[in-house]
Length: 199
Ligand code: TYD
Image (cartoon, rainbow, N blue to C red):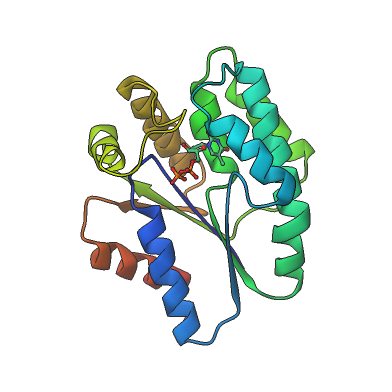
């Protein structure tokens, strides 16, 4: 089973993923937890380029770097773990590219969908979209460490990312489960567990 988590900055993905990890451990289920960008060796280098605020990155460069990271991630980490029969959980995957890069000037969503299709990337069995207003998420993110290149974008960018996610969810309602991320962590987690249907 391939599970992904999506959401804007400060949507609480990390907390839920940690709770899911403990849940699977308790059930002695074999699961592998990973994230994008930056999980493969090459990906770590790509991640530091992508998140560095000092870098002026053109939209097309950004998208190719992100998909370069993704191909390494899929081939080196996701596919081998799925083939071993493990549950693979990824913090972000290709929906992030539609939501975030879809906000960049000069990039059409069609271009992003074409990349996803042409690279023959595995489709998640289920994706959890932790949804909340951009200003609430950003406020949370700002209370943490210093802001990276994406987090430093204006509020309108993050509002656009949120809307892109909501559109994606409507178009893929069988795969993407929208969860109200303004609820308590326990409420959110019980919604997630119900959908995964593992006893
Ligand atoms: P990260 O520090 O991993 O943060 P988060 O907790 O928000 O996941 O930062 C990853 C950043 O990369 C995040 O701001 C979103 C961005 N990103 C994209 O723009 N497109 C993508 O396809 C992916 C996977 C991430």
